[in-house]
Length: 196
Image (tube, rainbow, N blue to C red; front, side, top):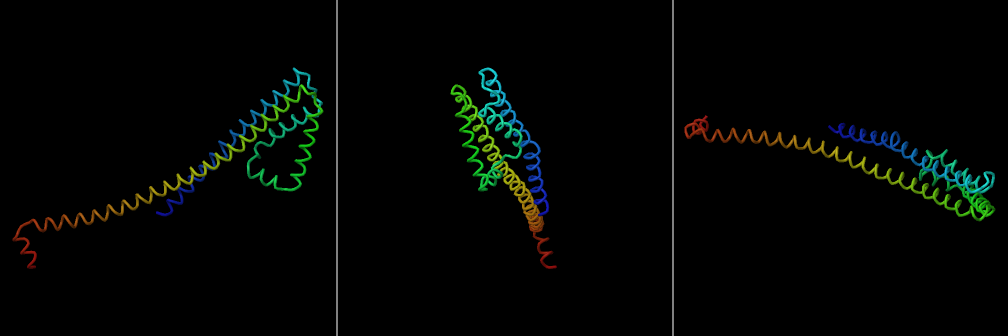
C-alpha cells in the first residue's frame, strides 16, 4: 500500500503546479498588468491635461519604465530578481539608470515633478506588493500542498492500521466466543471434551 501514498503525494503536487502556474500565476500577472496600464493611463492623461511634453526626458523615462514592467511582468519574481541583481554589471547599470532618471526628473518643470514622483511611488508600491504577494502565496501554497499530502498519507496509513487491528480483534473475538461457548455448554460437555 506504500504506492498509494506516493500516488496521492504526486497527485497533490501536480494539482499544486496546475493551480499555481496554470491558473493563479496567470491571473495574478494579468491583474498586475491591469494596474500598470491604469498607472500609465494616469500619466498620459496628466500629460495631456497639464502640458507635460510627451518628448520630455522625465515623461519618456516614466513611460518606458511602466512599459518594461508590463512587457516583462510574467518574468518578475524574487528568485529572478535576486539572480539578476547579484550580477555586478546589472548593479552598475542600475546606478547609471537611477542617476539619469533623477537628472531627467530635475529637468522637468517643478509643477510636474510632484506628479511624476507620485506616479513613480505608486509603481514602486505595485511592484513590491506583486513581489511579496506572489512569493508569500507561493510559500503558503507549498506549505498547503505538503500538509495536504501528509494528511492524505496519514489517513491511508491509519486506515491500514485500523484494518489490521480490526482483523486482529475479530480473530481474537471469534476465539473468545468459541472458548466461551465451549465453557458454557455444560459440565458433561466439558468433561467429555476434556477426556477426549
